[in-house]
Amino acid sequence: MHLSRPPLRPRHRVARSLAGQLFAVQVLIVALVVAGGAVLAYVLTSDRAQQAAERQVLATAHSVADAPTVLSAVQGSGDPTAVLQPYAEQVRRDARVDFVTIMDTHGIRWTHPDPREIGRHFLGHIGPALAGEQNFTETYTGTLGPSVRAVVPVLDATGKLVALVSVGITVQSLSGQLSGAITALVLVALAALVLGGVGTWLANRRLRRHTHGMGAAELSHLYDYHQATLHSVREGLVLLDRERRVVLCNDAARELLGLSGPVDGLPLAELPLPEPLRAAITGPEPARDQLQLTTDRVVVLNTSPIGDGPDLGTVVTLRDHTELQALSGELDSVRGFAEALSAQAHEAANRLHAVVSLIELGRHRQAVDFATAELELAQQLTDRVVGAVNEPVLAALLLGKAAQAAERGVELTLTEESRIDDALPADFSARDLVTLLGNLIDNAMDAAIEGSAAHDGPPTVTVTARSDARELLLRVADTGPGIEPDAVQQVFRRGWSTKQSGRGLGLALVAQTARRNGGSVEVGPNTTGAVLTVRIPLQRGREVSR
Image (cartoon, rainbow, N blue to C red; front, side):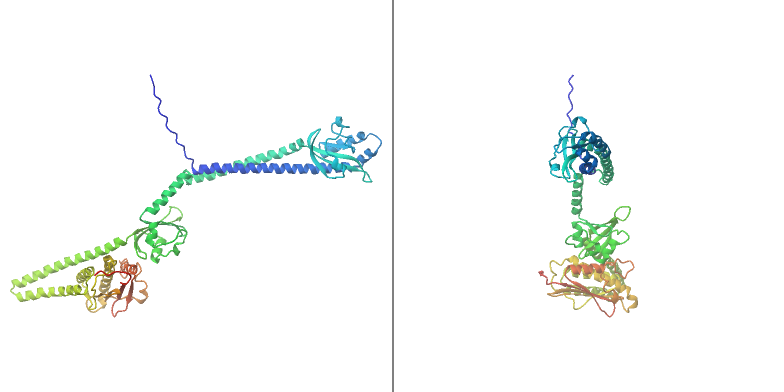
């Protein structure tokens, strides 16, 4: 029976984690440092032992050369060896050297640790000593092997050279002396290597926990994915550290906040942001879907602390709400129009019933007068608006607001000086017009109703809308309580409102829209109530469509 062998699966190389790679590199570095230190210490110890040996043999040689025993034995008529050999051996043992050799000026030994070498020629250089050199040392291989030796002259009372003395320590003895130091050095090096390895292992264990066991390539790819994701999302994202410094600001956030240039590392206080927005970001409580204004946008703000432990920073998200806010304003206007039309339909039905009842009672003339009087009032307002305002969006807005004002019991009038003969510039959007005039009239109606108790007559809102070749002017006056002088600078800030339940966004949107179109908003004096005036320049390279 033939059995087919299953195909071999390719073995995938397991990527070593970043912590593992760092551990291997650090252990190698520690090992190299310890090994290099051990070698350096050995070289220094060996060199110092060599120098100590030279000093020892030189000092011993001088002591022997100056000894009276040596001089008397050399100058005597007897056998110098008989006197000097016991003396030299005693000195060798006491000084802990390997040989003490006393010789004549021709290098013939009188003493030696090995008696068989007595009478033979000394192995080494005696020329410097014969020339009077007092501190000559060398390393030379003699009968006892390589040794560190000194050769000095023996002088009589007249300074005449009468003999030579050589004292030496073999290299083998030096190595024996170094063996203990080398052993201790090796143990210290091994202990340092172990401690360094353990410390490195502990540090890299913590690093492995923080990097989740990922390798360098994986971390690099994760960072690339992180950056690509943060800068591709349409929501603005800003990361702040615990010192309220910008750690990250993606492209959408830069656009929404109107930031230019590098901002990473800058404190939040140095960014050109509106004060209410900055206060909401740095507030003690997280922001949840707060509407905030920037220079030319409406944004939805959310903030959240980073982590569950100590304050590590703040995550700030921003969503563009400008278009939606404009649509909401238009929707509110349409809703107001619908409610006003519903109320008018109800009122028209009541009037119609009254007219029918008058006809049934035979009072035809009174029925005609009653019906035409109501039509005349409505037609007069329509004729005034249509005759004065040639801009269709503005005309529709005024008629709708007039119906809404009538429903709320407010008298809305259009001044005689109001006139807009030409259509507005193409780049001045209808939404901006609705935002400007709609919010001004809404705010004025609220103020007029609020101040009706302290004012004789019905609540009144007066609207002026005119344009010329230079600018568009929108002015709305009311008979409300007015604006306090100390509140004039705050009235256009987000959050300012005289209503208990108001969000204070309408006038802030008016100011923002005016600035975006290069215009301005003014608060002027009025005998009763307040007057707000918006001026939008029309000579800014725009072409007026006729």
